[in-house]
Image (cartoon, rainbow, N blue to C red; front, side):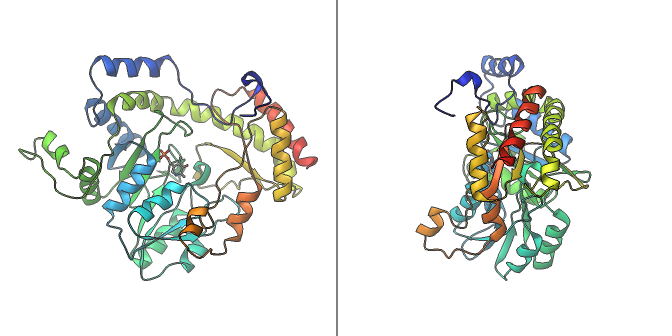
Length: 386
Ligand SMILES: *Cc1c(COP(=O)(O)O)cnc(C)c1O
């Protein structure tokens, strides 16, 4: 928020598209006493996720952060193991590794889509590599064929951080369902939301069985509720990662709106892309590469300015016009916590460059098209005068 402006003429980066239907669904859940997680609403929404995205198992969780923690627990990651992940991502990915006592090994990204570079990931493989954890930036697919082949070659698992990839595809397959497991976020900044929420997805029955227990405080409560055991008890290490049914009720409405929200986002994304394409062709900015096999969810729009200084000037100009444009991740490999832990800082030039030059423009379903055209024009002017 720009303190010099009234809220009225400030265009935020993202606003969730919530309405009466979500409010009614939440109120109904409360009236019916559907608050505890894993109840009839949660199970219904998990069925919707399985059907819509083509996963054998989907477990709703309290967040994507928790889904990632749950995933690394279920995959048996522990001290001595290494997990290869991008540095240009959210701290939750690295925290999930650190909380298991394992090592983060950061790989650089590809400049075209800011996703993990499989060539650099391959260089980082060692006999201790246990998991590859790609993250689908901006809801555009990583090179899953290359990453799956790498993982198969070294016996590692693939865990997709599809926090931003809900409803996006790679070929015919939905992100989050391609690796051994995948995680979604339903945070308010993501493509479908219940405020705070997430999901763990897998096609592996054995992994799903472990995940179900970990999510329920390390107990076999889920099997008990299905009548498979006559009492439930502590059967493994676990935690409390189940989403409340009242939030699942909101999510159910949001998932039904995904097609409409995606189409609106795409129309806005195209307005930005088309207006800025000449500047991309002239080498003034770098726009996202459009990869034919990737069907993104148009979750966010980014471009990279010519230099860090030009980026800062572009952001200043846009904000002065009341446009909530912003940067994105501060790289993890050189973050204060890594330094405080005394860990060496690898050289990841593309990551450093992207983080220092990236601009995101406001993008949310209810943003009017004429507003987006105006923002695109302002962005083009800001780039030209930077
Ligand atoms: C948002 C996000 C997360 C965290 O999601 P929560 O549901 O807020 O825990 C993790 N990874 C990435 C890439 C994200 O964008």
